Image (cartoon, rainbow, N blue to C red; front, side, top):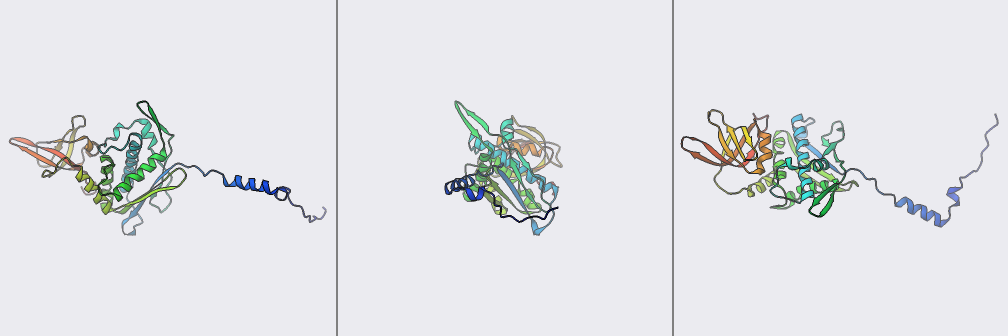
Length: 296
């Protein structure tokens, strides 16, 4: 076999480009489009006392409430903010597909829940007008809802349903979590919003809910289990321990989602109680609270 010979060969293309061609080549490299990825809504959980564990109950509740907030954000971008909206059952299948969050596998030792919005754009028809609503719009509105509550004293552009979903985080915060941080990004991975939710934020949410009450009547609290519920009529029956008679309740549509969740579970109802001679009391409901299952 012959000995290898050293040569001074150089490729032609790097040394034969004219200055004009080099400039065009550099311009082409600089104009490559940014990689497009699904917009994100990530949740970072901050366990109390630097704990390294978290119950599955808290994890599942946070995931469910994050999805609900995304659903309310999707409703807002499709139909406009509605302070009285609360019933997610009215979402169309197409809109529910737009707001559906999917999650990557969790990283070991991490309590970050990464989630993506992956649906195709949705066409919303309003009379003769047509609009395209995209997942980027949902991620943007999700951040706007949290930012409005974080920065404004009395935000009116947040639906009652979104407020109730945020207040429901109290169960997790009271149990073992010091805070929850939501961060959003668009399809170009540009950050949109980052808001941390703790006791102060929840107090703000409750103040907003308090101002939404229809009146300032003297309220009483009744505890029991919802054993019958009529969403159409806005009525329910509450079974109270130690009483043979069930208490009838009247509620507005804004409480339908919470009461559906509360069927046959312990619940605290706050409202105006009407007591009638020889008949069971009737409560006109102003607030609904579902205690943490670990309390009962």
